[in-house]
Length: 91
Image: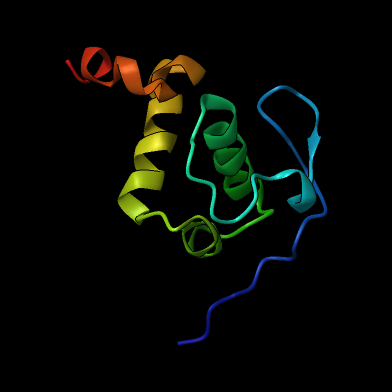
């Protein structure tokens, strides 16, 4: 099966409205995931800067973890990415 490759974009608009390039993304091996970093990775994948597979490999994430970040943003905005509020938002 041949997968169609999407052309790589040079930048996407980040969560704060500014241009976001690969150089602006959190470094590989990031362990402290604050809201801004999670939102940047989600924006990069949604905009085509990184593929889901590349993001998961680069940041040692499971697909489920990334998809939970994306779903939290969709449902609750950036505040949904707060780890201290996860239980509140799951109800």
